[in-house]
Length: 202
Image 1 (cartoon, rainbow, N blue to C red):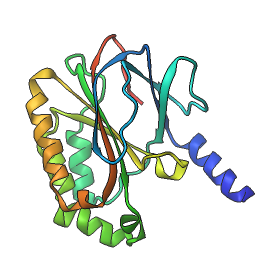
Image 2: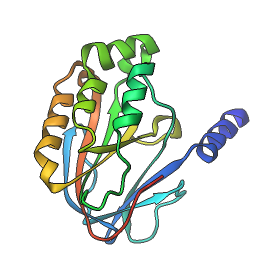
Image 3: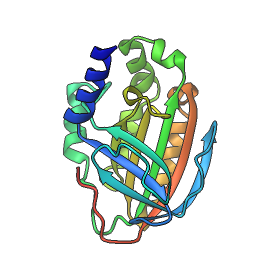
């Protein structure tokens, strides 16, 4: 048990972490919180994003989601090279629209081998290929939460300009129609717009 706790602590400390905190104030105004599958999150007017692992929910905030960035999963060398070339940085001045999409997959997904998950993720669902079509218009950052004991497995943060709103809707619709999404048991779609000069560059 002690080893397990130390491993989790090392994972949180050594991996770049991020905390999404929803409440009555923040750098992002929340325009909608909608359930896609399973239980929704509590509606909230604002959200703050803080680099690092926030250990407890601050006063006057509604909910807290945390994740860490890690190595790319389910990608081959060619796909990795394409992503590194095309993926823009977060915090671009014109990208005033954003979405936070937390996802939890079912136990059937996690019982599969890495190879079987890769086959569904890309060979059948074209997750990477679909995402590449919308770069560099839509910036994306994935945070892993499953190993932290969080309520979701993944937290995906997107930023884009208002002129790319239709493209973003196309992107999420394509992903939700794929084979991979049959294994999603909980998903919430949080939409936001920037209210300050905040940047998320970690």
